[in-house]
Length: 537
Ligand code: G16
Image (cartoon, rainbow, N blue to C red):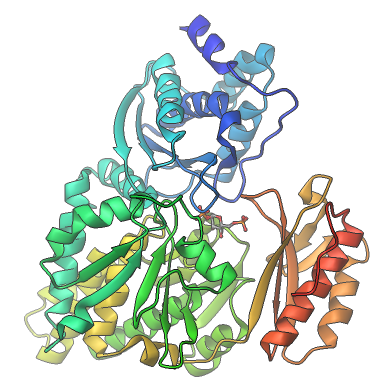
């Protein structure tokens, strides 16, 4: 066994390549990943033995271009793997051939792992051409350490998170099959939409951009379960276009462009863990309904239901530095809900959301979900069963119960979020325009700068809102921001792409563009930018 994995581990290991377990696992060009996948199979096996639970390994690079790939590890309750094990992942990924066994033994010793424990690993993959052989490398890694595997093949990332949680809760969360997932979500959706009367076919129709990825495939499979209560018009279904190319949630959010025109549209990303909505108005103008707007819509709906049900549960919204300033102001000043800000990355938002009775977390890029504490779920279930609950309260708690069943609480899920949004719009009789009118976004711009050294020369603090290095960068940003009205800007190294990200918002699009450009120039000059200097937009 040892010989086999030593052989496998070092096929194609590129010289001098150092990778870090980033915002959402390892990501780079697929040709560099064979050995990483095999090693993540080994690590998942150790994690399974340590936790005495099933662990998930998803082969995907989500929003990245088709030629990239990556891997995300999933912990027993369907959440992202812990920070300590992210460290082991980085350690193993970068180990030299002759120190790999030692590294493995170190982890076993440090974590006091009983190697006689059985191990079980669920594996899934997206539709990238490289995913088939890379997921085979994961399966080989698990088998090398004697672990049992279940290969789910082509699934969305959130589906695999769901399967892992279902397995480790022994079916309490649902049945660990793709069909079980469709049944659970569609039943909850149908129950919710029964509360929306007189919907026309137009109101049931939604244009869905599948980013030419796995989400499109899975949406097709799920449609019959929705019994025409949602009529999906699918584009970018993978039959011809390239994954994430000029389509998908990241393209729509960052480029602020629509790959399709309609009164209510949405886009998934490459592994269907993110979603953004948008529409084109009668003057042909594009309007984006991003993760911040989704968080506002869902938290408004939940707050109303809690009031109707007479439940005193605390709702909080978790955002990142990318949250539009208008959304934060609306949530705090008008809705009076607690808002907190974490670093980018679902793992950070998820943990913060766990602190509340109901934690709504969404990144502006459309990645998010809602978490209900065990105590909150218990209160809701008890009220549903209470014979003394009056009709209005009963209706509200039943809606809350179905909402909990519709939401994938393990991780952001484009399909589950889409059904949730459709149900809320239907129940409240709202159009995309009505939703958009809740508050007005500040114009904003996101840019990328490539630097020659490690992009982590940019170091940040205060939930990534301030740069602490290189020296002078934050002072320059502060001076630039002062030139514009209602302005804010920050920079941070991406954890999924080899770039530094720049965000700016201001009172007009012209000002946001100009500020983003000036800050990009500062990054380019102070952090060693490569290629041509950033040009004005
Ligand atoms: C991943 C993470 C998200 C993060 C995004 C961009 O999304 O899951 O939390 O917002 O990367 O991260 P960064 O700015 O560090 O590159 P996905 O959908 O690509 O898995």
